[in-house]
Image (cartoon, rainbow, N blue to C red; front, side):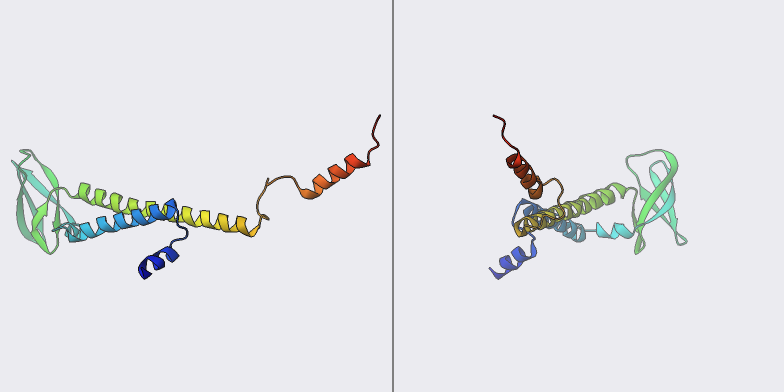
Length: 164
């Protein structure tokens, strides 16, 4: 129960914005942990791109003076290809990691940005509510008619003689 109280004191307000920030942060953290724990996924973040030559579905590439080859079963073309390899194990290379890298970045980073946006909205809402409860309206414009102006109008109305 003490953990829940600490969490509530950390959040700026107990509203939907704070709940949205918390949910988005938990989801982003879960995606990040999943990336870290997935077999072989994190090793591709420091991948090195080398140029290889494809001929009839076999891509040959060279890394630090050693020759390697990789099968591309979906292609029978003769062309140059980009091969991505982990510097620790250059024999285990792949032909395309950009989609996975970009999608992991967008999903995880996007959820952290959503959490940040919800947190900023919650903080702004709380500050606005606190300012209104204190009665501090000095920075507001258009909050109504100035009381002195109203008194002048009332006094000018009562000072006139009535026609009748």
